[in-house]
Image 1 (cartoon, rainbow, N blue to C red):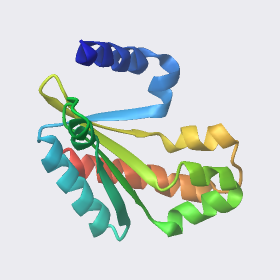
Image 2 (tube, rainbow, N blue to C red; image 1 turned 90 degrees about the vertical axis):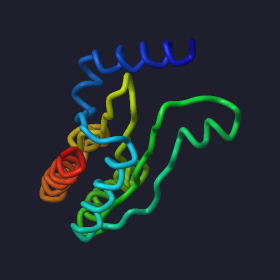
Image 3 (cartoon, rainbow, N blue to C red; image 1 turned 180 degrees about the horizontal axis):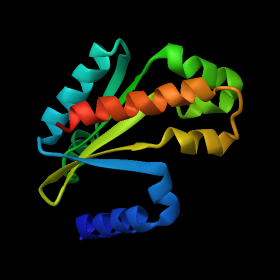
Image 4 (cartoon, rainbow, N blue to C red; image 1 turned 180 degrees about the vertical axis):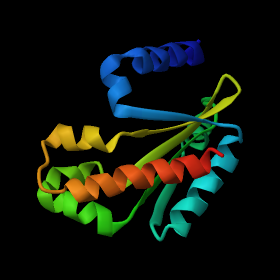
Length: 147
């Protein structure tokens, strides 16, 4: 029952125009673990740092609950993030970057917040080059992970 409610909630969120504008989702032909491995390799190959991997399914299992494979990868590059945080310190709540990889209905998905949503949330001015670099990097890294 929890899975059904969670699935319906996610589908409703993805169908919401506001959510769709902020959330970029890509499908992966690989498993969650393989997609995470590809993402980590792409991030490290690009010279960025992976700060953490959070296995939400393992956390659920630890408290006696079930959750399909769901892994959060937290990573960043200070060359890109620092100008954004200098423009508005509140952006530090959203950085480093986070990409979620999960399995749903036997399909692997990868999702992340569009950097334009971060920029709009705090009305950040003066970091356009950093946002452009972040947008390009996220697209490149997540595309590599979903090949």
